[in-house]
Length: 99
Image 1 (cartoon, helix red, strand yellow):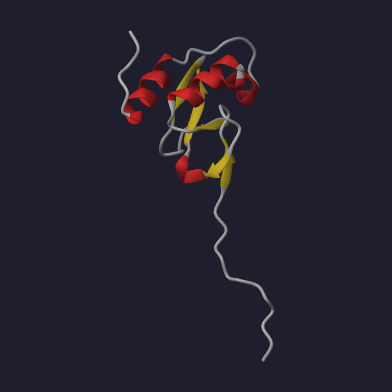
Image 2 (cartoon, rainbow, N blue to C red):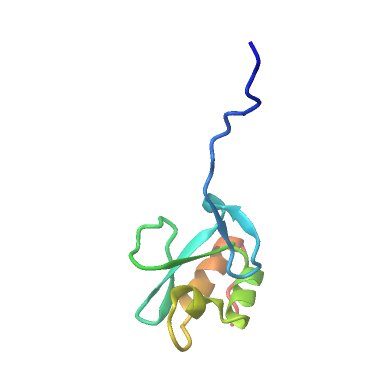
């Protein structure tokens, strides 16, 4: 019997990192949301509102801040406080928080 040539590979959701702009599997990225002008890490993906995704890498966070990617992703005007997010990313990346 001829095969259809299709493989049965389960599709996995992909997202784009707002810092480096590379696509990755959703589970490899951290979801970030904005609450009252503050970028908040959302590792469970349960907080309400628009989300942006970011690698757990301080370099990606720096790129996102420099490119003003968070206000654009959240469709907000002005700047957002990223200190809480920076502490979270640096802690998870194994680095020490900047003084």
